[in-house]
Amino acid sequence: MKGNAKFRKILGISCFIISAACVTGCGNPGSKEYKQAVSYMEEGSYNEAAELMKQAVSLDQGNKKYAIGYGNALTMMADYDNAREVFLGAVKNSRGKESKKVNKQAYRGIAMTYYESGIYDQAKAYFKLALDANVLSDMDNDLSAYYANCELMMNDYEGAAKSFSKLIDNNDKTKATVKAKYYIGRGNAYLMMENFATALEDYDNAISEDDDCYEAYLGRYFALMGTHDKDAADKTLDTALGIKDRGKDSDYYKAVFYFYKSEYEKSLELLQQSLDDGNKEAIYYIGRVYQAQNNINAAIDNYSTYLTAYPGRKNAEICNQMAGCYMAQEDYETAAVWLDDGIKVSGGSMKENLMYNRIIVYERLGDYKSAKELADQYLENYKNADVTREYEFIKTRYREEKK
Image (cartoon, rainbow, N blue to C red):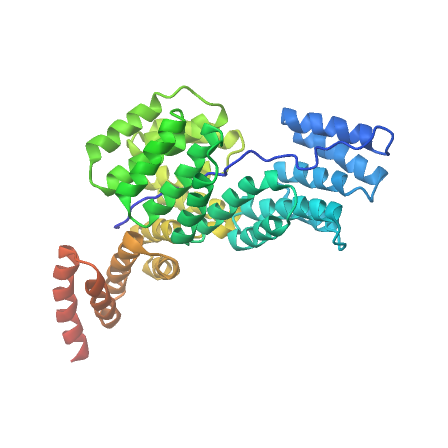
């Protein structure tokens, strides 16, 4: 099975903001519950916040700020369907300035429910609606960053690079930690375009802004591996593992670093801790660990669970991993389905890997005609000695098949 791994977690640029945190007057119905709910949100007590926000809404059903606060709390609880319904109910039909403010926050809320669900086309559309509202301009950098991430996740790498460049160029006074994330986003776009040298520059710029940024070190590792500088890539992992823990994300990223160092038991232990803390991103790499350990059924189960949690993330990479699992089980029919799905959304070296694996699957299924046709396409675009040798064998079998 041929394949290479890219970023799994594309960074959300900012923490989820409480857009409706402008508390209404103390005499308004529900204001007491709302203020207490905001305090709970700030503490991370989202269940309690949601319950109080719900009470505030019931006491003043016409107050859209309460509704947006309630939607935000539900989103933080990962109750995306109900949150979306609440946000949609908050949208106003009138065109006044106050209505635009409410709608901008509601559109952002809807976008976040889709974004966190991995449904990036819908998220992008609602982020655009929010950006088009000419009010609350202090929200625009955050919205633009999420919009760029949607482009990235939808394989529009050039678009993402341009969007992140605008954020970098137009925000000289941005906090260093935030600007680092913009560099990472653009670096990720260049990485996926296999412009490794430029990606490496962006990851280094991110580290210069925030030298404790796990994401930048992970990107730097991938970029160096793309240039075949394995020694420097390995040193990057060691440096990243030396970073002081930064909360719950530490377990996840250190698990990923250990995975790429092939220290699978350490990786699995930290991934499980991260999952126990509520980070569903860990499920994907748990699958990777099991696949590396040849525990194929467990790998498939975890990949399937991951795609159930994030249906919009059925991208070329995970299709390749699933296909590899089924190839290992000699279930070539199922592997073919995953490879075909992956080829449709792939590009660059990932498409090369998927096409290579698809040729092998055609051979295993005895379909030498299709294997030859795909090998013809492959060799028009890529140079690979293994495929060239395989092509000669395929032609021999194809001639025999035609007789």
